[in-house]
Image (cartoon, rainbow, N blue to C red; front, side, top):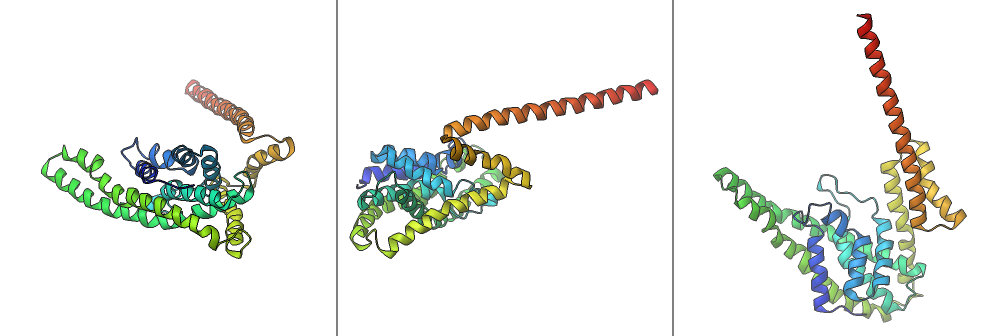
Amino acid sequence: MSISWLQAAILGLFACLSSMPGLGGTSIGNYTLGRPLVGGLVCGLVLGDLKLGIICGIAMQLVYIALVTPGGTVSADVRAVSYIGIPLAMVAIRSQGIDIHSAAAADLAKSMGTLVGTVGTVLFYGTATMNLLWQHIGWKAVEKGDFRKIYTVDFGLPWISHFIFSFLPTLIMCKLGADAVTALKTALPLDGIPMKTLFTVGSLLPCVGIAILLKQIVENLADFIPFFVGFTLAASLGLNLVSCAVVSLIFAVLIYEIKLAQTNSATAGAALSDDDDEEDI
């Protein structure tokens, strides 16, 4: 598998769009289009191997499932993971001749994504730093009362930042990196220590993502019960993710109805108490 300049340019464009605030806000950009799960679909379509793209995206999504950017602080850049890591992982898997359905393919994809995601933090902070220049231009425009210039500052000038720190790095790394990854086929055989190390590290990375997710949602020991329901259903009944999601939705609706009934009961009790107080007066 190889990546052409046109394909690399398309991936660079998606890398820009995945973090552009103007693209419907970060909900559509960073937190949707920039996620590895969606990026795998896009990369699969662009590179002509939809199944492998989705498999790589799913594998990398497990690692970054709980990744957030509080106060602009990032430990990894999912923009780079999705549109640099996934294409390079696809090339690596195909060049090494690894079965795409095997655990080795997923482990290699996770390792590649982690390496690129860490490097991508430099691109993230570079974009944020250059955007400060446009922010100063915007403040000067506000002070002068030139409010129409704000549209240029918000929707036009940031494209320069993303072109330099998103489009160009993605274009170059996808095109030249693909050739480098293919060349590593002879230098790093599958039975060698370097490749085995990558597979081992990749198999452990999902534990990090799940641990971060648990740290955010678990407040007491009872919160572990619904978390392990999905694992229990998959292990004992052989259900897939869609089936587990449907079962979880049923429990979510029941819990919502119970909470709603409790709230209504408390509200009604408070209203009756107020009526009794008025009658006593």
